[in-house]
Length: 306
Image (cartoon, rainbow, N blue to C red):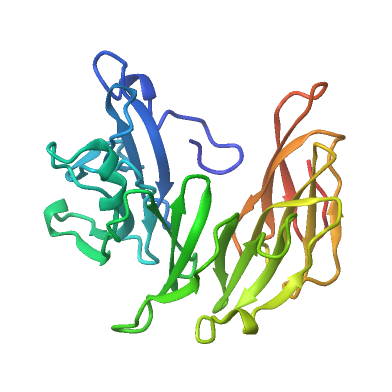
């Protein structure tokens, strides 16, 4: 890590030091929004099972209290205050057959400085051993989004409004299994889905009226490009397409209008634009057979990159 573009780099996590014999691997890593903490998952002996730990960015020391077992599927999703995070935990009972462990996955909330035994269950397990859960939180702290995963497909998506006390879970998607991803911005839920669109499309869903008849399509499906990714970066929609085995990146207004292509170095592969919803500066990775893997800085507003 480094402070600012020209800061001196220093090691924050050394994967070789996660275990004495070097057999542990590093899983998901997520930073608190205030940048002071990093939650990360350690997989002992390169196993599927994982332990969630929390490290102070300034001191580089791990918390002795914030240690959570059962983090096999955990991708910590920090809350807006940066004093806790949501995560998916599974049973640590050694008597539970491995094939049944996914069905025990549940969404919990961990408050920093407290024992994992006190973590609050936000969404109980569904008991279906053929599925697992994935949880993400919106950048503004309003929504918690949970995907029910079945193999490589999404079986359902649930949304919880965190700003409303005792708010019920909303079934955003049910009765369909395919490629889907949801993210929230300014009180709206954006859904990238292949339902009725094999190459993918983007719709807006009102959590108060989640029925399919109320979905508003803002980016229609393309006849020759696959919509691989979508996010809000710099106040605009950032879309990633796969076209003839190469990546294309496109910026649009939040209503899907005014498409503008991001000029890439050539034909190659990119993982899309990464950045904050309300900040102009963003980044993308690009590589090809003739271009070494490189990270570019992009101005969302002007489209200029370096």
